[in-house]
Image: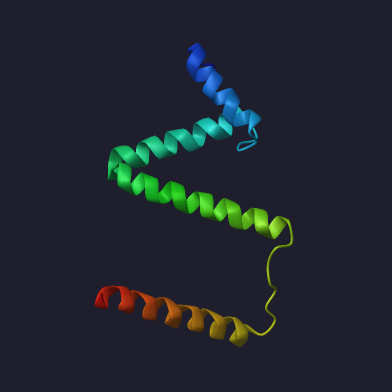
Length: 99
């Protein structure tokens, strides 16, 4: 499929490609269209939440690619760490709620 873009849209697309966020125009337009359809169906707030989640997942993928992760052979250590973080978060939320 071939499409004609107005100069401003073409410039925006090229800026995103130059920034390296997408491998090509088709990938960028695919994400943009999905974002538009989600916003249309579920509202802008939900589309924004999904965009944030995607960005966080992309960041996690980059960390993995750069070796910035911990490999747990003993899953009980990971479970303990997650449990401790959860308890700290719960305590801080309770503290905020008590104020």
